[in-house]
Length: 280
Image (cartoon, rainbow, N blue to C red):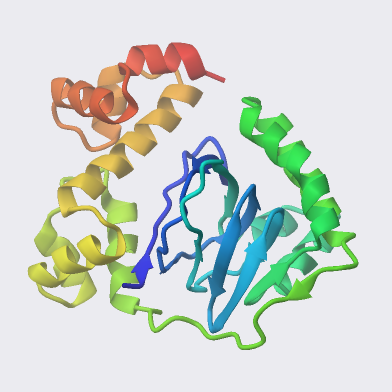
């Protein structure tokens, strides 16, 4: 089943990266609103993007535009595949250009021609591995950003890149109702928001809200609200000296004890310890 994935970035950063090690890559047909840059190592199998399917082998480096259904698939192997993934919001470069940073303009051209996807040469993919690893291991936001810029400079210079799908076949979802549901929850999570309010704003029933969240986000209404609130709390803990009681209130938690319990359950440490370890 085609599933929409959603990413709620820690507000201390404007993009996301991860590193996975898998002995088997299961077929997971999905899409999201972010650009995705994926480097796959020590793996061989099939890659599906939009209407295009082809074999891939290591190293495989692909840049996928927003709202393009895609998946990789590989059989079990004794050697674990390494998968480096960078997710960048659709508006990321627009914000940089609007702020007057002209140096980003050449990089933005890569984004504008990414639809539906770009496959980079094996030589480029090999050179990119070091930068992906540095991004994964680095804890300094500014240093991580510098490695990302170097990575994009490498991609721009690749003479062997190719568009791997000629048809820009957007998924059957450009679901305005789901967008309304997520928008309302994203902008009202700090208030005592209810399912009925979300349903009224989205012009649908409560059962439809529950069904859409389960289908496209994979979370219940209450789980999603709590994650939004904890995400905001992490940002405030990192960037302010506000008392924990104030942070809890500003994030929509009416009881400090409930805030502590939920924070510890999701982040796996107390708010005070998180602040001590990650304040900037």
